[in-house]
Length: 172
Image (cartoon, rainbow, N blue to C red; front, side, top):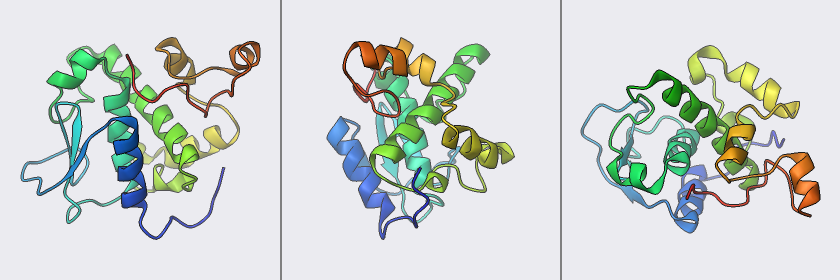
């Protein structure tokens, strides 16, 4: 993984990528409390308040939540989406969002600490960095199950690239 310094404007790089893959981004004030400062999920789109945004990589994490939702779930999503009533579903979606954001930062050639920064993941950022850099792609099996990527064996049989390359970025 690339440990280079974060690009001059990672927010723009990330937002351009999200627009290209079909996640709309709006830059405007967010006047309500959100789980990650300055980022609101609103009906499958992201509202970003750059004056409140602490870490650009958090945009990728929240986009990951949108990406792993079904289209119907995206339409209904609002606010802190990582907390549905079903705790197992919430955990699965969180793991997929983490893994998806790793694939996105790999695609964008951003450093791993852009997403896995010191204030994130309840103190587990260093562990996540270590695991992903070892190739232990936590959550990739579930991303494959929903049709977004291939593991090494499946990729070889299909003459494709394995995770962190993606077949597509949004769940059908």
